[in-house]
Image (cartoon, rainbow, N blue to C red; front, top):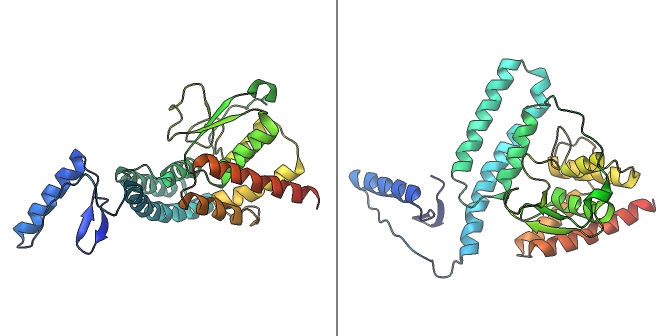
Length: 276
């Protein structure tokens, strides 16, 4: 059901019709078998703020998504050696598991969007039209939209946009690409500037805007390995940055502050690599 345990015998679900009905059914079943159960509806739990409750649910789903991520990465590595029927069957199994976890992801864990993009990648390369090179002059003073709680690829991509594409960008955060009209979404599911094929969003932006900078190419390799965790380039330098970004998010820093501090990290990394 996706409930989380907050005390030895206390389990919690959001107060919505479907979870409430499930708990009613379960409580009755426990009593039918001679057990004892009490169903309580509460507006708040003293000493446990709503933010903490949401974090508990998201942490539980992050574990589920983490297991699925490992399986999908293994599948992507093995896929070329599998016959088509076996690959389709296994991918369908992963998709079903993703939908099961998504159904109990009550607070839209950021990990769910990551797994959705990984599933697209696991489907294999699709026949696509040749994408035209974009002109940075047409992308000045734009509003750029990405998901909340930015991590390595989102922060790195925003830094790339601000330093090499749009001189006066505005960054906003929302869970879906259509949440803010006229904003340009990036690192979100099924948008132009996101994961495509075996490229992370940072790499996609470099390709679409034809940015020829060897230092940025190296940073792209680092972000790729830290974000996709496939060891394609054997670059581990950005893993530390990724963990710092996640740590700032856990400390409760705003998305804007995580972005600002992340920009300082990438500015320093870029300056270091330039001087090597």
